[in-house]
Amino acid sequence: MSSPPSEVQTGAALDVLRRVFGYDAFRDGQQEIIEHVIAGHDALVLMPTGGGKSLCYQIPALVRRGVGVVISPLIALMQDQVDALRALGVRAGFINSTQDFEERRLVEAQFVAGELDLLYLAPERLRLPATVELLDRGTISLFAIDEAHCVSQWGHDFRPDYLLLSGLHERWPDVPRIALTATATPATRAEIAARLDLERARHFVHSFDRPNIQYRIEPKTDPKKQLLTLLRTEHAGDAGIVYCLSRNSVEKTAEFLTANGIEALPYHAGLDAATRAANQARFLREDGLVMVATIAFGMGIDKPDVRFVAHLDLPKSVEGYYQETGRAGRDGLPSTAWLAYGLQDVVNLRKLIDASEGDEAHRRRLTAHLDAMLALCETVDCRRVRLLDYFGESAEPCGNCDTCLSPPQSWDGTIAAQKILSAVVRLDRERRQKFGAGHIIDILLGRKTAKVIQFDHDALTVFGVGAELREAEWRGVVRQLLAQGLLAVESSYGALVLTDRSADVLRGQRKVMLRREPERPAKSKGSAKPGRKTSPAADLPEEAVPLFERLRAWRAATAKEQGVPAYVIFHDATLREIATVRPSSLAELSRVSGVGENKLAKYGEQVLATVADHGSDQGGADQPPPEDDIDW
Ligand code: ADP
Ligand code: ZN
Picture (tube, protein in one colour):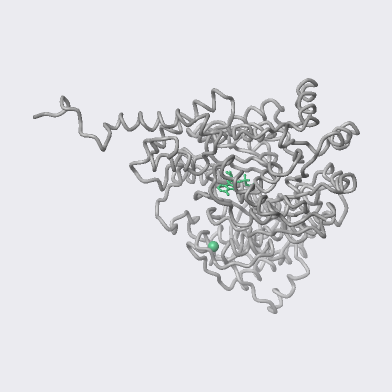
């Protein structure tokens, strides 16, 4: 049995936090977890993106004897993760398939000699007996299992290699394990614990709330234009991610943004590995780029200053949505999660589910995920309350989502629903043929389209009975009936069909409450500060902005020179603080959050010079102007 942490160890953790990372204090929850692991116990940590999970294993690895082994699926990011640690003066290395033999040999030798603090490893390496033998030759301080939800089949990122991790405990019973994830419903969490044999481990469940992210979901009308408006009015010059369902729409959207003067890069699994790596590297390294991507992009991307995540298509699950939107605002500054969704999304995703491989149970699971996502889209309640509820957490209305900022009205849509459902019944009965939403809406609106005439649908009793609603409103009704399971889409061409529950509505035994479609999609008009612009410099005192921009330029040049992402040098938050306090000595600079010993030694003089230069360019606000500059 390990003993509880001694005061010496607790002091050691805080000392490492201050000295190495340059932070004053632990965030909520970190200290408990860190002490627990330092004492040699297992832990399952659920914390939202940006919550500060990395420190929970990095600090114990630095305090405990031996090398901390971090299992991560994110091969493409290991180099950056290791660079970021080295910039702090931490001895870190990785072993994965991107290395040549010599590089790997070197890291292996360092591991065996105990010359590393942290070793990053891809899970598939554990398949190789050589890896296991290597691990046996060194001293391991802990195993950190990052992105632990990858072990769960119920979740959305299942990686078969993660199943290998169940063996860690048997092979190295004395080494503490800490599994971490930013996404876990109660079901996923139970599965993680079971598969990793962490049921008896202590579970640290942190609030999943991301208060700095503003959630907005609006009906899709002209998605590209809606996106452009969002970027131009609220996120000019900001870095962000735009998610699309298909590779084709990724390409088209990236082209569209570029043509409209917004620098955007595509990312999807159909691009060759070199292009993907290059685009990812640019996104991480340069300021203010937009990445247009499929969900192949993003896991583990710890770029702290992603200011918006936009979805142009409906995500397949709430877990996926939360994970993807969670990539915004890791630095805690205001950020936007925006989603445009429409009827066609529902049709497309249902089709994908019908066509998916796997058994009936698998399809039922996918359907359950989609239904939960639809319910989130159509809710008249606070989005955050619904999201957190999904993760088993209760919350109060947040004041920072679209439904809180401009509350939608709900209305009794029973009669409208009956009209649609009876049109579906009529068409089904008379023609033994099924039709999609567009045609049914044409009938309700009394439009004599070619198709209506061809099938004599202007003779139906339901023809023209729906003039009280506009087309967009009818589409909204159909979408919401789908979301509520009162209507379904049949495979392949999106035909509408009844469900078990439709009959109750038709018989008038069930009231249908619907969300009122806004005249125009709600912009952040109700936002706390109208016209708020969440650029990196937003909320800075005006006089600090020029210095902040100068520091960013210095950072960009330095990052480029060293071939590392800008945030590896300093985060925006750190530069903001420097621009505000204008330190004039190394001692003052060292008190800024995010300036640890190593960075102080490496960049301190340059930062002070940048601050001082700026001061003199400004004519030194505090100093009197030189005499020859004054007109007497
Ligand atoms: P996660 O892995 O949970 O998404 P990270 O470990 O990347 O989050 O941390 C998110 C950000 O918060 C990082 O920029 C990190 O440096 C910063 N951070 C973590 N812990 C602290 C702390 N105690 N004080 C200040 N900043 C912190
Ligand atoms: Zn809200």
